[in-house]
Length: 201
Figure 1 (cartoon, rainbow, N blue to C red):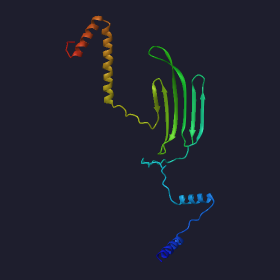
Figure 2: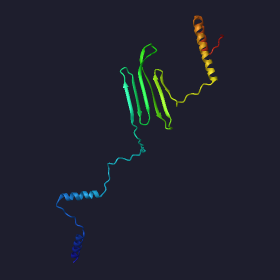
Figure 3: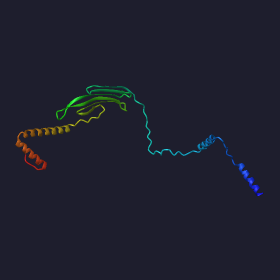
Figure 4: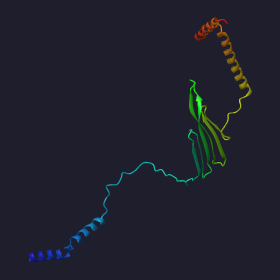
């Protein structure tokens, strides 16, 4: 009787378990396997590491159109160029070659550039700049460029006295250098001055 009870319990358990549907088609088994795989989220091991750099947001602005652009190139090295933009920037420049004599009396070709540009400042003021670049360097002119205050009369008088003293010393040295004995005496006095010794004049 015990065997009969154990067999009836085993049969009841076998009937109660869900039965797997068997398919004779391998495609159905593959689809079921893919569906079971997709139902469970899988970790993505290919993710890049987190970026701890600060995020920079770049604000884009509208593009400014070029209304006018012109460039002429001469065969002698000269050129002229000008352009105008949609936000009221006007610029023009011309350049040419100029022979400059150096310290060894050689003619060296040098490029001279002259031009100007105009734009509107954020406060609404129209800024105009004129410039020249040549053998004397870069020089710029404009009403908005600060200028130094005028030199006071006292400072100008002191500068005039210094310049007059330098000129008088140069003239005296030139006259004294015509006499060789005086030139030797001046060199000896200069050497004593350098060493801090005193002498009668």
